[in-house]
Image (cartoon, rainbow, N blue to C red; front, side):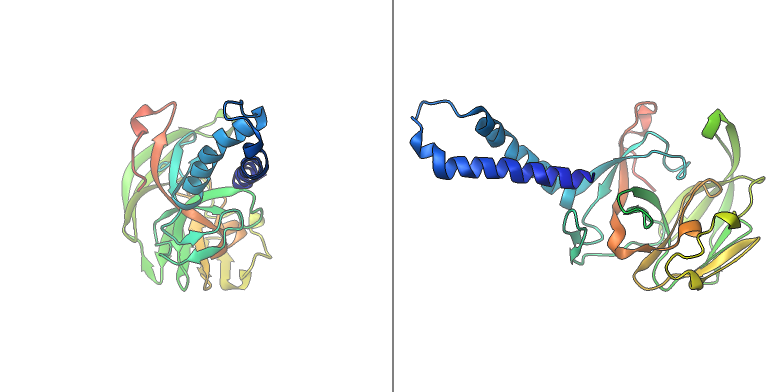
Length: 268
């Protein structure tokens, strides 16, 4: 169940209990009488739940990184903070935008609701915004006909699924205002065509072949990719992310039990 929905239910229950007591029972009690246990708990927890609910809904929300799809930018186990208002103020639970403040920019690391299962939150990098033509050929990105500036930056090693030791080629890539790291594996294909969903919305906007693909991003949608380019299930496979699925921009790592030096590091 959605955590925001759980908090909202708790907020309503504690608020109703406190309100009913104030309207119907408070005047009948002696001034020195103890509050009923249920009322006391409701009165104590309601302000706390309200503050946390508002903070998570409109300002910042914490998330934990569960996979290595955003390596080397984000590690498994990173706890991150997500800005909830930069892309517009949205009503909690239904995620409907009510105030338009800004839009995702190329290179932003964004949390969004997975299009195939909106109960799941995903995190990837914004590669294409509405109107962009995204081409990925031979493991290099081109946006609107302009290849991204990419520089070789040694190798990067990590432990993958099944405790396999993975050695990758690391590059520094300039995408919009973001200078960040990406990794690729020479022995992995550019894309696994057998895993591409043939029926995602606007599938006709994409042209796939053995060496990559080209996609035209429709209005109101975004194209997302992981920085671990050969080990990321992203827009290449399940399609575009609609604006209504946006949660917010990831901006800082606030904790990692295994890598304390990462605490307070801003996400590039």
